[in-house]
Length: 307
Image (cartoon, rainbow, N blue to C red):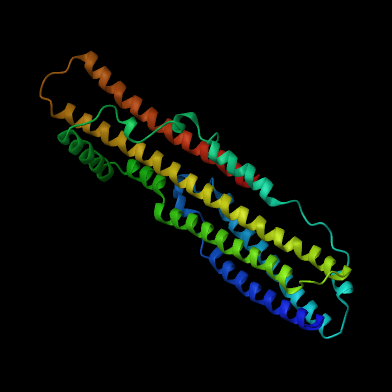
């Protein structure tokens, strides 16, 4: 096969990859832009996620545009309008691999050092004192329903904390899907470079390989970013759900206790009343402490995105 034919075939392969990158960009546009999925209480902290969506779209668009320019340039070379050496110019070594940076982010997220101690070892079941019998479980569940129905500030707090877990899970899945698609596109680009110019060892071909290696590395960096964002999104959503379950349990437990106290016809001594009031205050402080720990933890996580 002549060099001109090889160049046209290679250009056609690159054009196919460009179209596939365009499809990946459509996936990016499906993300929530205002982070409402993470709840009103925490969504504002994770603005880095929304900004990362936009940055990711820009980077994919940059690689896509690079392929457009490459396809047009190769066709000009195949038609004799310019030489391959002139088209390639003097390629640089490209940017530092993004995978090294992302590996550090993954290690940070997996190590959970960003999670405040109060939440780091917490579990929803462990927070609710001792196992309950069926009757007490019903009282606790009913107590939570009563609190949500009759105490608007509590309901707003839980609603602000809840977010939309299904949307968060969908976002994590989309990042994982993009990682898979970009990984395949990067591998296919490398395969085209190796196969379309098999046996060609000229200096201009080697220079072209060096030029396109930057695009291969860019795609690998995008894969690494997608992988990191999958982990970060899931970690944020899981921690919000954990804190929400703990807070709901504390509210339900307290309302059930108060209901029992109110229903008790016996005269309660002053020390017992003081102790009961202390229980209410302590529960309020615990709820506040868990919410503060959640906000601080997510702020720490957000910094891993910005870094």
